[in-house]
Image (cartoon, rainbow, N blue to C red; front, side, top):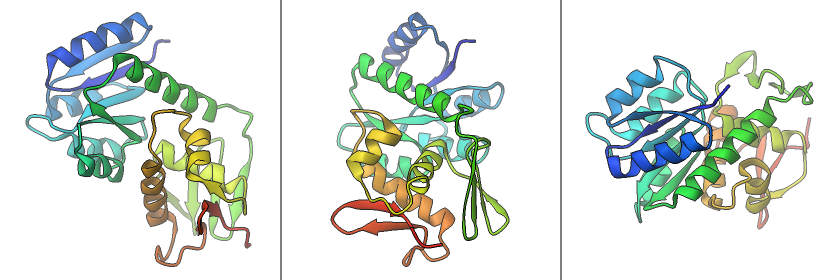
Length: 229
């Protein structure tokens, strides 16, 4: 069954060529020209991927991303204008998995989409049949759920993959580049993306983000999951 992609941008000159190329690649696509239309289409039928512009009429892309994240872990890549670093960071904070800067190369977009969809499919493979437990945390690698002190914690797809990488290799420090290679598998991703996702993950699983227990910073290296039970 073909993967479904929602393309959200108010510039037809961007959407139409991209839609054509993605459909040539075998995807089903739908277009939305503003934020309200994007939400209406997203919640009317399932999608496997969302490409979402930050600057949209009626409802901006950050708000759209936030509302999607309240109900879905679908992969989201946000589009930002060149040099708008704050939009990139805010997009990650609101739940986006990554961002791309306009103007972009269509080949790069297609490569990123393929990479993300392959990662999601691999993460759903039955070979990861186990449950990880450390103190109050329980991670089910089949159902992709996280329980903390008996309460389920909602993570995005990238946050879960990051937690899984660190937790299945407890005590091993990972550099940001190693994390990008293992989790994003994307030559275009930025190391800043790792820092933002670690911060978001800590906000969800740590009792005190200033003094984290589970996800630790390894000085001059990167990050690791605690090796203390």
